[in-house]
Length: 161
Image 1 (cartoon, rainbow, N blue to C red):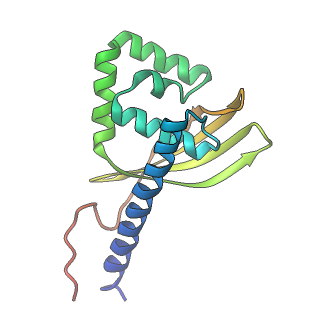
Image 2 (image 1 turned 90 degrees about the vertical axis):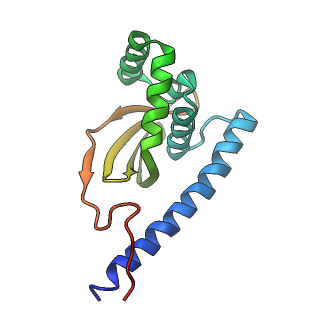
């Protein structure tokens, strides 16, 4: 069983990656083409990821609200839009995948979501707190990122036996 575990985990991660990119593309395209506001907290994660990949500072900041948004706006202002845009693209380029889970709806206007960012050498899990503002979900707070030990680092060769 120990010999098969790495192969099973790898197949699972590949399937999750395929699902992620297929699902993300449909949601991202739908939001961009229709101008529809994110209907769920999960949609905000994909909108934030798309904006980061494109280096779109305004769209990225639009995913946030409250003190968190003010802090990000100050950072963007201090860095300048061009440098902040490049920072977003570089940060997104380091991410090889995103997994969302454990949606916790708190009443009708608040929610929490567990977001796992997959990097080549590590995974980081972070709890995102959302608030419904004028019919649109926004990220209101972020818990500190926790590093998750990966059994098989991304891109590792598998030697089936």
